[in-house]
Image (tube, rainbow, N blue to C red; front, side, top):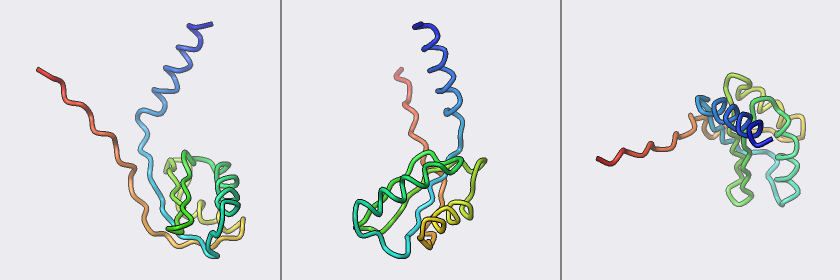
Length: 106
């Protein structure tokens, strides 16, 4: 059983290791006012293909979506927001920063 779990975990790590993800930041109209607005967005966007992570901020009025550009694009994500009643304006669409690799000590 442990061997199977290790194989699955290793496969998942290898699959995610080489992906070039992007982070789309957009502002919704109408504005988000509460936790229910945030939950509505998160609940519906998570089903879009390629979406890896969704972060919302009511004070900043932003929705940040980390996605795989080989599976979806900005227009599809904006269309998904439109389906749930939000027009959006793109603030930025940048590659996800890669974590710095540690230098080997000599």
